Image 1 (cartoon, rainbow, N blue to C red):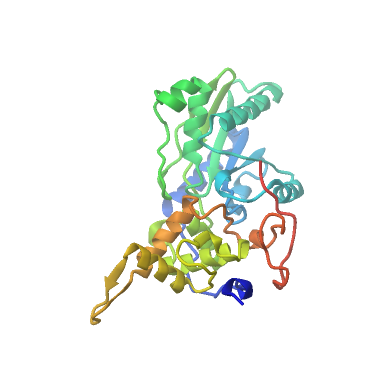
Image 2 (cartoon, rainbow, N blue to C red):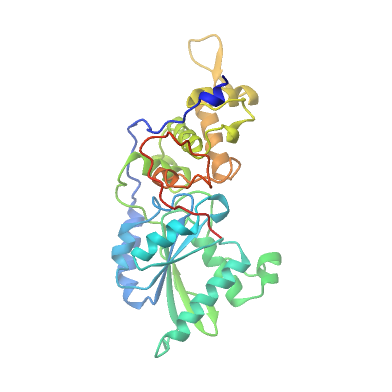
Length: 342
């Protein structure tokens, strides 16, 4: 009998001690500014990462904008297997509207602008100083990219913005958390009708609820580098999630021909293939560079090179058999309807 036939993925992840906080001073100032501006805001656009739909939901933002109309936008939809049935059920219970959003897509940006302009036209009387939006969410979920796309499409042609990129960006973007440090001055994204918005820094909770939430946030790039968990622990959690969604080991088949629950076996095979070894002081022979290789594996997942992934374990355990190869004998798995998005 082959290893693949007898392999069973872990259904429990070790309880490692990791830092559960990454809340900084500029985030506290941002929350205070949001509260100050809240009475002026007509619509809130809250961005969440579709790879961690639960972990990137922020209760602090819900409290600040409790009485405001809100549209939830799930970004990175091309990297996530999550689909509409779960999200519909979840948001219907909260009386919230939501949609998937590729912040770099002209088509998605046009659709969002249509929703925003419809909101303006439904307001009576129409706001004399224009409809005012605020873009909020956790760090590195795509807020500044969305702001630039909205302004570019709203004020110019697709050709100018998406091909020639003639219009100057108004919000800094980056691949790591914390690029935006302060709430922007008001930015016009449409003249007819008049629509203006505020871009805001990413805001985390003062402390997340558990280790797995923190690891999910690390995997989507929401946590600053200084407070990220040990890369090997994060990579082990990634392996845990990959095996839950596909126990065949197909996602890392290029390194060896069988599935594994041992992160050091996977990292060792990756390091051997890449020749990534380091010498340990006092030892004659070099060892695999586990930390460096773990960081490489995490980066591969973030770039989508390991396929579509959801890092929220509760969500992963809820996905239907038709979407993923989940073993029938896996214990205590709550099989709610968790669907693919369009």
